[in-house]
Length: 140
Image 1 (tube, rainbow, N blue to C red):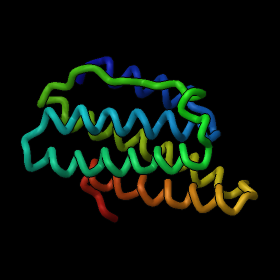
Image 2 (image 1 turned 90 degrees about the vertical axis):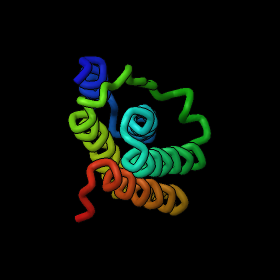
Image 3 (image 1 turned 30 degrees about the horizontal axis):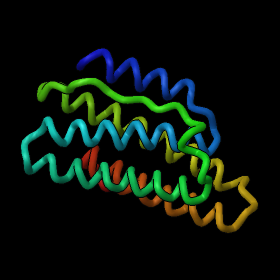
């Protein structure tokens, strides 16, 4: 796989904090990566990956609704070009990003005291779970 995807993901996974902005950064990277991948794979697979990108973007919308200033405060990572041969590894990268965002959201939901914020995190987690399943092909 292109080193850009792996390196960028590893950097983000190690630097994203346990806050709303860390969740947003991971989710944004997953959404952008899924869009990139959707344009690389055959049409039938691309549709499912496009739906995953939409799930990740909906999770971003929920985060931005709960914390309107989050977009400007979080680091944004974009991945480079993807070759068709790199798709299996790219799926793993996106799965790891989504899993990390999901874990952070679950951790934050446990300590969040505002009910509106808890509800937003719940919706974020639901979108991350479905997006992750569409990327990985694992629904269990």
